[in-house]
Each structure stands twice: as structure tokens, then as C-alpha cells.
Image (tube, rainbow over all chains, first blue to last red; front, top):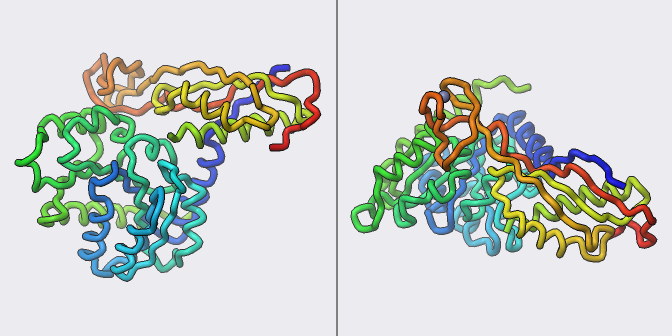
Length: 222
Length: 123
Ligand SMILES: [Zn+2]
């Protein structure tokens, strides 16, 4: 007996992601899902962002990692609410994990929620977490061909960050090629070059966040 | 790696169908997998076989049909099948665009055994 079903395999995740999106919108919180491979500097970027904002914006952070709470401990030093999600080896965050983590936050008292996804350039792109925007980060030490190798991730990004630009003279990184790949894959997303060490480009990143926050608060709460 | 979590979702859906039919044993699950889904079908099959052990889906065949990508051009609104990882419109040459097909991950059918499975669909 063959039974025809058209079941979206992702349905459960997508429904939960919508619920997360609604809770965040109701509370007026902008959620950013930051994705990258391990070691490109997501946690450092979040630290620099928190330091620069210096509590002018109320920020909460969700840290996703396969194991350990080391990153959450780093973020907690900035005196912001932080929740660690350990995926027990899982290679990406899913909406149910984010929904559970939201219970640890006082959402009406937040403006911005930064979600640091598990370091991986493949699967995080496939799971909607209920975020308002996806940010993809790569670093110069990883090589300029990352966009060509992981096109899906770059196509879905609302902003693309290139980190460690201070190391560009010392590594094999062709900036023009990288920029062309990114632009061809995703002509609409801004490319923000930064160095978390020298602070170069951080202003552009903070400005982008400000613009997204303004966009978020301009939207009527349904 | 994410094939394992997808396999579990597929198994849940299939067991639900089996449950609606008295817990009949599952013989076959057919999927549509979009080219843009970043799913390796062989890994998915392996993960599904592992996840379905000791359930009503143990030994079930996982089959799939691949759905090619189709993109709508962001400037001339033509749809086309991209030939390269860079989506370049054959009509006007614009890059980028919006995927209208190829993001599927769908169970289209579940085949159940006609002889009832006494163990039922309980995992
Ligand atoms: Zn066109």
C-alpha cells in the first residue's frame, strides 16, 4: 500500500522558527544568526561588538557549540545575558534549541540578540532559526575560494564579513577574486572587511547593525 | 553530518504515517531532494538505515528523486536552470537571483506492508 504524503521534512523546524520569529518581533528584538567555519573569529567579533556598544544597546547572546561553555564564559565577562547551547556533537543549531534558549532571556528588555551558530559552513545555512538576518563570516587565512566552495551559505547571507584583513599581506588571499565571487553569488549583500585585532572596519559593521535595528523598529508589531 | 538530523525527521514523518495505518511496517520512503539542499543522498540513506533500526521502518528502502535548481533572475525576472555555482542569467547576464526550485526536501510517499506489523510503530 503506497500512501501519498507531501510532508516537508523541515516542517517542524520551520514552524518552530516562525514561533521564534514572532516572539522576537513581539518583543522588538533584532536577532542575527552569525555563521562561519571554526576559527574565523565569530566569538571575537561578538566581544568587540559588545565592547564597542558598551551597553548603549541591550544585547543578549546565544552561543552554539558542539561541546564546552568556553565561549559563553568569554561573553559573560561583558556583563550581558548569555546562554550556551551545547549541541552534543551536532553540527548546526536548530530552531527548537533556540526556542528553548529564549526562555533564559527577558526579551522585552533586549534590543539585539546575537546567535553564534556552530562553526561550519555547510548545514547552518539549511536551518531557519527564526532570525531576522543571516551574517556569514570568513577570514583571510581560510583562502579566497570559500564562497565558491560553499555557495549556498553565501547566497543566503544578508551581510558578509571578511575578518583578519590585517593578515592579508601574509597569506595567500586574493581579495579581488573573493569580492567577485561574493558579488556574483549574492549581489545584494554588503561585504564588510574587518580586523578584530586592529579594529579596522568595525565601524561599518556597527553601522550595519544600527541600520538593521532601525529597520526592525520601523516594522509594525503584528 | 546534518544528514543524521534530517534522517530522524524523515523517520518521524514515516512513523506518523505508519501510526495512522495501525502501525504497519514501512517498506519504502520516497523523497524529493532539491539540488540546493546540500544533502548527500547516500549519507542520508545510511543515516536513515541506522535511525530506523528497531522501528516499523527497519529495513525500509529510502529512494529519492533529485530536483534541479531553477532561479528567477533578479533583473529581467526570467527563470532559468543555473549551469554553474554562480547564477548567471542566460537572458540578460545578471548574477544572483532567487531560487524558485531546488530547495525541496519532501517526503512524497510512504509504502506500507499489507500485512500488519505486530510490533507496531513504537520506537
Ligand atoms: Zn535576466
